[in-house]
Length: 166
Image 1 (cartoon, rainbow, N blue to C red):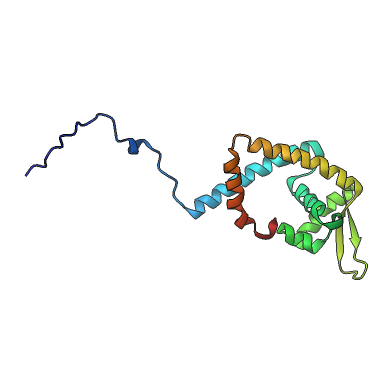
Image 2 (cartoon, rainbow, N blue to C red; image 1 turned 180 degrees about the horizontal axis):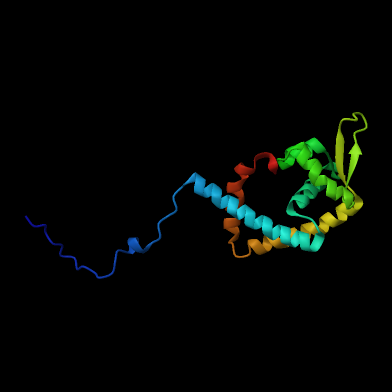
């Protein structure tokens, strides 16, 4: 038995749907690895600019930025560690060079000798303002070709991942 032939003329061009690229699948591992690669690329770009112009890394900048956002420009070291997702010893190691170059100072708590604060110095505040300008320019360059709506969507999608970090 033969199948009936259609009266519709056949075209030599393939189906238009076949020419469309396949939509990406929702693979959590692939998505996570893409985020890791994107993060590594961003760190390199920020590190290059911040290091070249200000002598600090992105990690240093984020510590200074968090201190700059805190009331009075100071935080308990344990709170800074929690806010940055680091251990207390990681914050101590990260703050040491910033203390040596005079951007941060260690302040004891007046009522509890076991508690220490990290505080921006006046020089730290000035330098942080300069670093923010550099960081804003790097971010603007990274997203220069992105439509504003896509950038807003990306920020909204990343929000749940960052949790208490922002």
